[in-house]
Image 1 (spheres, rainbow, N blue to C red):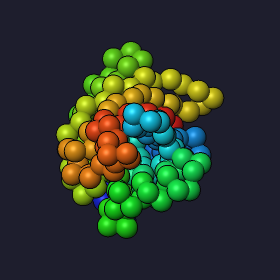
Image 2 (image 1 turned 30 degrees about the vertical axis):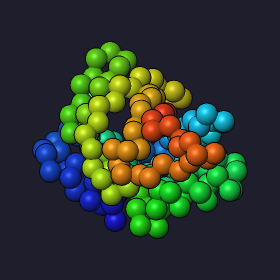
Image 3 (image 1 turned 135 degrees about the horizontal axis):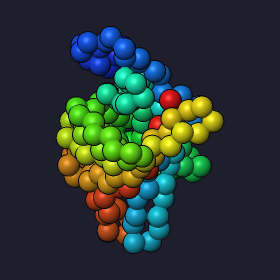
Image 4 (image 1 turned 135 degrees about the vertical axis):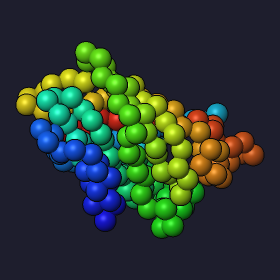
Length: 173
């Protein structure tokens, strides 16, 4: 349903000479990593859905959806705690939709809105663009603060996990 909404949002502009391409879920991923003074952890989601609107090889819009439940760390206890803390049943999806894109050579600045834990925030991403085996790949990193999304940070030994979570993405279409 969210994919249809994103598609409708992206299709409101003139579609002459424009193409809408699905994100390749098999080649795309998003991962996060966080810290606590005792240890670090990370999880990866290899099931990203979305679309990219292009015109003559230039990216016009991007919309992507990742399910919270699809992030896997390899540790079932850590995953279940993450799902509980992120209230995955109440807020099952993380959604990104671009609002403006500036492409220069092999770099792209993507401004957009991320919806996470039921809260929408403006975000600016810097990505690298690479052509790989007939696919276009966008890769980059950014940081989110859990407190900005009203996520209650868990604690261990009376010390909360760090507020900043590092996000890495590889979007292939």
